[in-house]
Image (cartoon, rainbow, N blue to C red; front, side, top):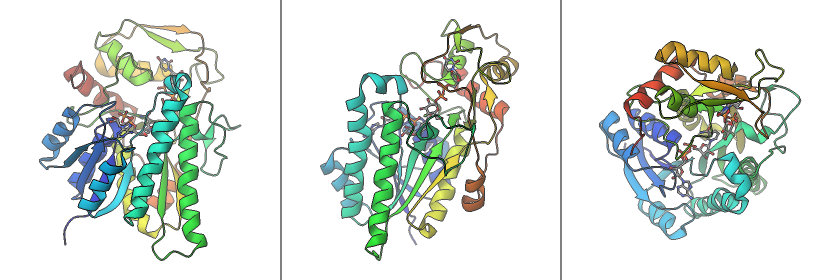
Length: 346
Ligand code: NAD
Ligand code: UFG
């Protein structure tokens, strides 16, 4: 029997490239569609180097119907892992149309082509941001998802709705080959592949904590601004559920195993179930890299919440998945990638 083919949208990006490695290693055939708007083809060359296997790369935009038509008419795709999207919260506030156009319309074009070719299994990269600002710090999947505070988060909630509606339509019509949809709500992915060959390569000044801290540690940036020191948390700084990117993508492999038995649409949190403060992350970086991390506590960042972490119990029960790596692993792997590739893929 030939290997199942998986279409990975956004496969040249940070999380997508790590997913390609794991998919190839367990024997899937991988087709990547990416417009390289936030990535470089070098990441895919490194994926092939790590795995010793080839993948098929199509440089195209998911909003390009003709390009998608070519892919689906050429390949018998088993399922789609849908990572392609724009993801910068601040930028989405400044350029909402661009975010809705790319993330929402892009998904509409993708699912329309999937429907046309009868490819009805999709695993979508959603985010804990869809929960907005609930009254609890431990998030379960049954919390309402209508509180996102920025266009990026809203675009994720909208795509979740579209995918749910597709599954519902097939249920209502008793379709013989119904849509099977898994929404994976990521907490804070960090870290890099153990080889140090692939990792996160942000454009310009990083928005997120860990890429910023690692660029301070490697000497590219002067000083970290810690956004807020007066939150009601263990040390006053923000607490998040950091998850190793390899654990995260392994969750997608488990989801692929489970998807055929899913009825309609299911959402799962992918997180460790434990939060760390900004100061705890800084202290792990200092300890593991032996570098000093220059930082200053400044005003809170608009839109930030004090603390959140996942209840990952549902993913354990239904996908048989849980994280395996701890904060030290995440920092050590981030550092290996950052220190051996100080300029990313450039
Ligand atoms: P990334 O920017 O590194 O990867 C996204 C990839 O999609 C890039 O290679 C980009 O070139 C490509 N892309 C964007 N729009 C496209 C389009 N219209 N057509 C084709 N390709 C397109 O981001 P990432 O961190 O790997 O995130 C992957 C997914 O996970 C995104 O959907 C993101 O919103 C989601 N997510 C990420 C995080 C995080 O903290 N990294 C957290 C929650 C959810
Ligand atoms: N932080 C700093 N200084 C920085 C950057 C961040 O102190 O320079 C703090 C933040 O205030 C927060 C913590 O570090 O307390 C984590 O911030 P990140 O920007 O790394 O991550 P967020 O939790 O704000 O958001 C991330 C992604 C979103 C995604 C969300 C999912 O950026 O896209 O996780 O939970 F939606």
